[in-house]
Amino acid sequence: MRMLERLRGADRCLVGTWVKIPALETVELLARAGFDFVVVDMEHSPISLESAYRAVVVAQGLGVHALVRVPDAGGSHLQRVLDIGADGILVPHVTGRADAERAMSGMIFPPRGTRGSGSTSRAGAWGLDGNAEYVRRGDEETLRIPQLEDLSALEEVEEILDTPGLNGVFLGMGDLTLSTGLKADDPVLRRHVDRLLAGAKARGLPCGVAARDAAAAQEAARDGFSFVMISNDASIFGRAAAQLRNAAGPLPLP
Image (cartoon, rainbow, N blue to C red; front, side):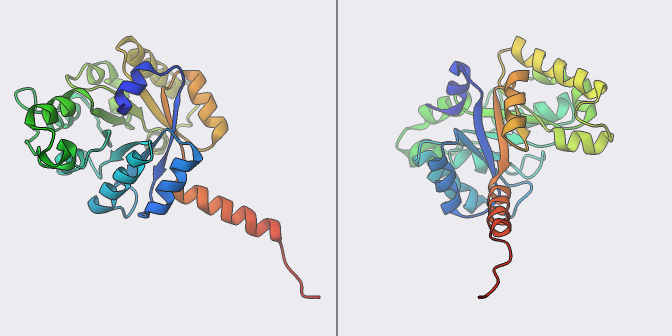
């Protein structure tokens, strides 16, 4: 079952985390820890396309859904990332309907979009599935998620959510608070977030967000988000390491 299908039938908020370390061992550990999905982050990490490919293969092989956040909204990475067989793509900084249309078009096959055919890629089982199944799966089972993290995007949220081919949405609260100078609980931002959640729900679109910790993830689920990324692999390791070292304290010799 692909992640899009699971989200549509889910009775709970799906829990994932960001992958920023280009290592397969951490992906395996996250899978064994019980995360529902991972998001391989090519925007804010040193992860290359090859590293992203290997992370996706390992995650999916262990029963974990794998999304990829591409480096930018330019579209040059969309086709290659889709052809590695990811469950879907997050496109950062989609600022309006035109950005959303351009991104969605690059992830949908003609005649509705502009994605090129690569049925001999992993997404097409290296040619074993045939072109028709490769195209069907790409158009019907792939998550296409714009990240709304600019005030202009939230002001145009209804138009963005109506973009043909869009089948999920992600709220980038970090960049939103940074660019506006407002806190996440500011009434102005809260109204925009409520409008986003209501619009997504009305259209049956899964809506995701990032959370710094478990408490924030629980709050996001109560608010109505259908998938949430808690922390990231680097921070999880770093905080656990710091906690362990601090707990040991100074170790004086006898």
